[in-house]
Amino acid sequence: MSRKGTLVLLTVLLVFLNADQMVMSPNIGAIEQEFGIGDGHIGMVASVFTILGAAISLLWGYWADRFSRKRLLVFSILVGEIPCLMSAFSGSFAQLFLWRALTGIGVGASFPIAFSLVGDLFGQEKRASVSGILGVSISLGSIVGMIVGGFSGGAMGWRFPFLVVSIPNILLGFLAFFLLKEPQRGAMEEGIGELVREGHRYPGQVRFSDYLALFKNRTNLLLFIQGLMGTIPWGAIPYYLVEFFRRERGLSVVLATVVFLVFGVGNMLGVLAGGWWGGRMYRKKPAKVPFFCGWTTALGALLTLGVFWYEPAGTLGGLVILSTLGFFAAFFDSTTGPNMKMMLLNVNRPQDRGRIFSVFNLTDSLGAGFGKFFGGTVSIALGSLAAAMKISALFWFGCAVVLLLLIPFFEGDIATLKNKMRGLGRLVLEEKVQHQED
Image 1 (cartoon, rainbow, N blue to C red):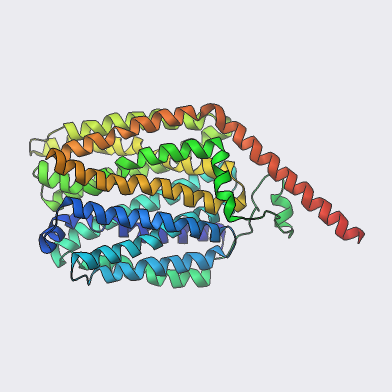
Image 2 (image 1 turned 90 degrees about the vertical axis):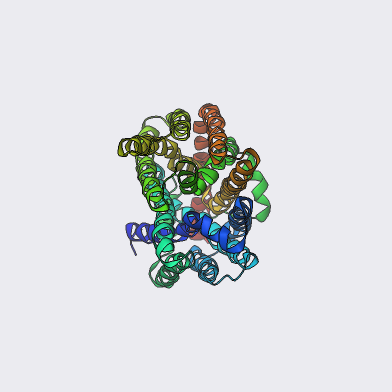
């Protein structure tokens, strides 16, 4: 399979995997009513789904740096999608809690594997746009989950959407086993990639203990911090958005889902545009990338607060204003995502990328998981889901500050990686000469 074909397959797989995360959201009210639970319980389910999967992905990231990523990806899909299928047959809240927790394992495992693969398929200057494509698949998956949950759940009951999002990906997992081709590790790195493509073995070693060493990289550390802060609103706001419009703005579930879809389109276009802009800026001067991300994140946060302050009067004009404001809020909120992933790919060695993205997924998911719990808990404490959403959005301002702090460090970390790759290239050449002499 070609590089573009592999990217297409990964994109489709991630769409269905991430549909799992949001398929419950439009049916929160129905699930709460059937099992006699509240927002706090739903928040707890969503948090465990995210956090457990992210924690276990640390192990999957280590395996991705050592073993066949194709086989690990297929296995992770089955691990996640079979419990998603079983969620449709939950007879109690305890059973639903168990199946959702297990589903989170498969979703968390796929993240480091996918980005480790694309790091060895594409060069530095293309990684922002490729990360944007994968980011769109993640966003599209959330939208697909919301659409399936909102429309089929309303017509067929809250259980049916779990069947719709799980069965296709089980079939796609088997397809990936036969079609996906494992890329050569290190093949796209300056200083050693040409030697690897000629057939020489990439000499990087992998040790589980190297996880701690990843935090010595300044770009990694700052992106982890901002990821933890920034994904609190990413966890709370999309998850409760439809319920917010239904409960506090008086919209029906179907209409609220349509408005959410407009927000989702803004999110996807923001991811694509952010990856495109980031790639162009990286070619001119890499330090421009964190500068761009910091200011667009701050702008997105301001617009998001505007969404939750604005109260449409129930008219078509009011809904148009709300949707437009939300579209641009989601657009600017989303431009940072692909560039963060590109920055991580471009400052970490090929044999570290599975682990770096597993750690990133952990910090990302801790924030997102806590964000869901935070949103439900603050909603109960203050008696207002709107207040919980506004408070969640404030965390994006902290994220913007951390991104701006990254500006003086990013280019130096890129240069450090290039020097390491050149050193490995010299080592390979020395081994080649020694082999010829022998």
